[in-house]
Structures are given as structure tokens and as C-alpha cells.
Image (cartoon, rainbow, N blue to C red; front, side, top):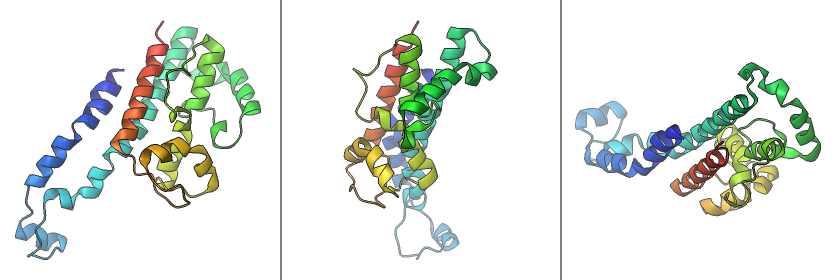
Length: 203
């Protein structure tokens, strides 16, 4: 939980401070020449590195998914008193059951796919988090795949079908080739869901 709070949540909360500071730094004439910017054009450091700033929310969200994956693995290993190398074999029966009931993007049996994670927690430990999670919870797996492999572009109908709630929160068009930029609002939705997963697994 500390990494989620201290790294993801804290960073997301303080982005505006970084942005305001970057706005204060004016690019010199020498730097403009170096970067091929017209001398007469007023430019701040934020203008110069805007793409790297805009991607921060996306990076944090992908990192958050990885933190939850690691937590889930460590939680099960701890409860079952097994080695991390034996986890995949330990979960084999549940993986088989999952594949029989699921298709499409949600068929993944990685804990990056929160639908599978929720299934394992419910089947194995009777942990039910359905009541408190957001409408985007079950879209975490497809969202990560879209962000990492397709740069957030809704490139096909499968993404459209599996990311309806994310698309709604992001306020983008529900059309092919629309792009999920990852707003701060979306990151906070998943931060809260991650916290609920961890709180539910307290034992």
C-alpha cells in the first residue's frame, strides 16, 4: 500500500506543482537555436517537454497495475506458504476454470487482468469486492493492453466493447481510433480500486 500512496497517489496529487514550476522557466535564445525554435517565439520549459509531462498519468497507471499484480502474487504466496516459483502451478486449476468461463481480452490469467484477480480472490478465499469497486474495475486488463500495445488508441471493436466505462470517464468519442489519454480522474478511480483490493485482502 505504501508504494501506491507514496509514489502513485502522491505523484498524481502534486503534478500541478511541477507544471506550474515548468511554466516559469523561459527558454533562452541559445536553447531556441539548439532546438530549432524561432527566436521571436516565447517558449517555456513546459512547452519544450510537454509530451513527457502529459504521459505521467499514463505511466503511473501502468505502474499501479504492476504494483497490484505484485501484491496479489505476494498475498497468495504468503497465505499458502509456498514459493513464488510455485505460484503458477498452484493456480493451474483456477486458470483452467477461468478459461472455460471467459473469452476475448478478459481471458488472460495474469493478475494485470483485475477480472481474473477478482475471480481468484473470490474462488480461493471468499473475498468479495464487487460491492465497492468502480465501474472501470473489470476493464483494467483491457485498458493496460490498450495503453501499452496500442498507445491508448481504440483500434478495434473489441476495445470498444471492453472499455465502455473508461471511455465514458475519459469523455472521449466512442469511435474507432479515438485515443485514451489517461486523465487524472481515471488514475484516481484506479487508485481507489487498488486500495480496496488491498484492504479486502487484510488477514
